[in-house]
Image (tube, rainbow, N blue to C red; front, side, top):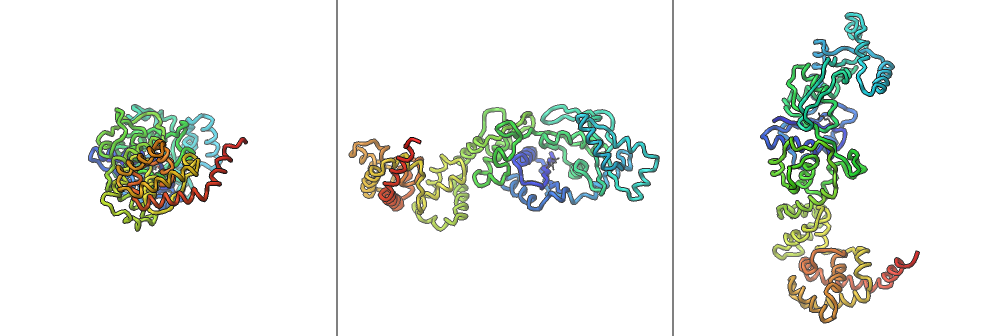
Length: 492
Ligand code: GLU
């Protein structure tokens, strides 16, 4: 199976493009086939090297590796033009000398006919005297070359949609060479697919109307016709075509938060279903189970919550050493690497990550949480303060008492728990009354992993430092905190 991904570098790697690339790559990998990357850069004005690089980086991040290419469509313009000339010489195409005014009129007529081909350009060409077209061309008169769409109908067995049939009378005689001799998109694609012997073209539904034209061109040129499959569009939550309004559509924007395996898992399920309710799958399982027959025919909805959920599942099950390397690289970016040795207890770093990843849904959030366990100022979240330091004097009192008992404690989760619960009993309050203000002091947040694990992973020095800082803040900010409370509850 020889398949390809043929992006135009006029934009970044879009979620839809990444999915097309992935589906083709899966077909190649499961069949021992070849995945070809072709950059369709013939639109020189809109293509850029930066976008080509962005597309390559996106594919590399996802682990979608190509076996051949990247080929650049612009390298073969001379061959495309020659193919157009060949069709002209064979009487399968004709010269079109239509004026801009005539073409504008045709367009208006086509719109009025709801798309049906007018053959107006063909009629004008046919009205020329024998030999006239060649003479005018030889004299240098600008003209386009149009493909002469044959009679009949064009059919193919679409790998997703089943039998597809277009009446040729609805297909306009498409321009294959422009006035400057440059080939158009459909001609270039047909030549290039044949050149690298593509036998399956799997791409988005937005190309459905190009397919009969490409089949006709391939036949006219004597090329083998590949199989085709068209994958439904990706939709936003409102059922409309996915766009920036729905969230990020550039794959690069997911790199900070998502694991590539989660993104691959997510993209695979956008329009494909394994046929049971299995959702969390690694690359190998997806390669094994992917099948054209299970591509859904209707649009697939992009569900950002599902992506985050899948990411969380993959974070929880990925190799811990790999996760550690990933997090450390991020910390290095944040110039926190030199703090890594702060805790030299064996297994500390892996244990911490293992604890934190259980709740994480984004890599970035995980990294931010890791940072909490390194020396540095805690930022108190206003909502956490409002909820658990509501009565500052009391929070202060509990934290002071806690500091005293914890200071004398062996720094392991169990003795720490024992100490805290003992204190709660002595004070005649539920343990939660101590735990909540303590959590705000240690993490600044209202939610965290179990508090005894938090204490353990922070270590004694950092924990006691943070309690001290909380006590200072509470002492200094009491009036302010109270005022804040009153302000919020005052009637409008
Ligand atoms: N270059 C085209 C695009 O980016 C894809 C062509 C194809 O897959 O046949 O939409």
